[in-house]
Amino acid sequence: MGERLTARFDLPVAYDVVFTRRVFSGDNPDLARSLEPRAAGAPPRALFVLDDGLMDARPGFLGEIRAWADAHGVELAGEPLVIPGGETCKNNPRWVERLRDAIAERGVCRRSYVVAVGGGAVLDCAGYAAATAHRGVRHVRVPTTTLSQADSAVGVKNGVNAAGVKNFLGCFSPPDAVVVDPDLLATLTDRDWRAGVAEAVKVALLKDPAFFEWIEANAGRLAGRDLGAMERLIRRSAALHLSHIAEGGDPFERGASRPLDFGHWAAHRLETLSGFGLNHGEAVAVGLVLDLAYSVRAGMLDEAVAERVWATLDAVGFTLDSPLLTDGAGGLHPGLLRGLDDFREHLGGELTIMLLSEIGRGVEVHAMDPGLIEAAAGALRARAAGVPA
Ligand SMILES: NC(=O)c1ccc[n+]([C@@H]2O[C@H](COP(=O)([O-])OP(=O)(O)OC[C@H]3O[C@@H](n4cnc5c(N)ncnc54)[C@H](O)[C@@H]3O)[C@@H](O)[C@H]2O)c1
Ligand SMILES: [Zn+2]
Image 1 (cartoon, rainbow, N blue to C red):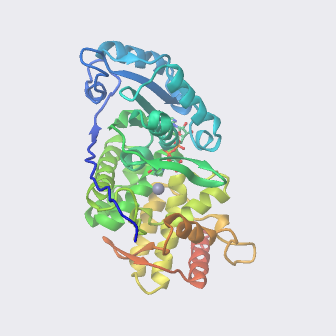
Image 2: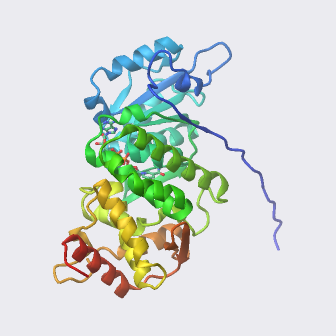
């Protein structure tokens, strides 16, 4: 037997998620307070990375950032970099390279910050570049979509797409802070506005029945772009996601169980099969109702619960059907089941899928029956087409 030495240590991790309004105004200290100086007496230094969709929607945004930096004594590491929003920045490796080049050329050190302002895709891409340059430059996220504010930005994952697989290259790297401002959501398209509600429904179904009931009762306000309702949804959803990460016992997903991926095995496939024509939230909405229809057919869930979730997502405006669920002959789409294989491979062990037995109670299973998936998919398609069950 050889000699065995063991290195064992814990790394304390703490970061704040701050909820605020008018984040870039000269008198709002929340973002600047999240940035520590590089050295005693020196100002904090930040390279801003901006989502081009946000830039197009907010003329004058560059000026707002310069004025904010002046007002708060933050040194900008050159002009903010603008990168394409949505999956474009995660699909084409040149954008990560652009970010890494900028970090190198502008002397962004490990005590400087990359501050990413944008949707989940831009935050994933910028977070990945920051986490890998110099083995980790500090990064702060300012999410500007409902989905990133309610879910993706508060977590510890970063990544880009490669080898034909979503998020194939990535890392677990907690942000230094997250600053959430619902005022930034006003310019979203209706599709991106509603996307975050799917993730909130997902986490509510698993962890907080009262929150699900609130979403159910407020679906009309959410569909009607009521900012107060959306702010409330985002705060509760973000808090539930954050407490799962901080207190769930597996922040870096070492185990096979990923409860927050409820509805996601099909969602990831639908996004890919649609060439990203479906956005993440839209695909999650379909993935959720599919797994609920499956739960009913597996004898685990009362059909009335699946109906309530369907009605809620429908009232928020989601299309709960996709031609990508089935083939032309009414069978299952040949590409869909690969979602289960992708999950098994990504987890690296036993397949683990979250289903539901009642609101607030998830149940993990280690296999899914293709015949029942086909029946569930067929039922969704028929329901969406208005055919009685
Ligand atoms: N890291 C994680 O834990 C995690 C979790 C869930 C999802 N994600 C990722 O997040 C991405 C989806 O993020 P998303 O739903 O935020 O969408 P997105 O980042 O794809 O953005 C959607 C669109 O909105 C535009 N946009 C962003 N902010 C805007 C604003 N305020 N006004 C107008 N337009 C704006 C963008 O340019 C883009 O065209 C996916 O790549 C998904 O894989 C990551
Ligand atoms: Zn998701």
